[in-house]
Length: 168
Image (cartoon, rainbow, N blue to C red; front, side, top):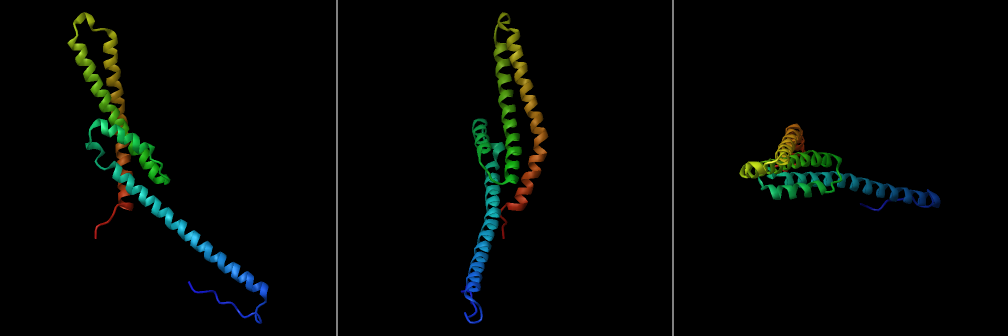
């Protein structure tokens, strides 16, 4: 940016020169700061959105133990964008419910097999209650997945449309 040209002292008093310099400098600083923060805000949200999309990619295909760890890590990510946070919480919650459904379903199968393998006199009401509780928790988690999946898919599609890299 070129130097600001001021009127000669004969045409403008010294105080006005100082004010013009200060105002010009202040205006330049304000434009730079405002432009930088506006640009950074958009870039930050775009970077966060792309990171979230990357972290969620293929989440359904990984093994249960890794998925549970990955979901927990995802839910701890400190995004600054409200839009990205909302999608993280929604989709992270859905994947967490999916993992819970799988874990509790596997628990129910394991408990049922142990109960059926035990002699009849060792099969107690407590074992049946444990199986029932695991099945109920699995079913409740699947209901949460069913409720959250359409919303998650919609919000992910919005992020992809807005921020996914475009091929030329």
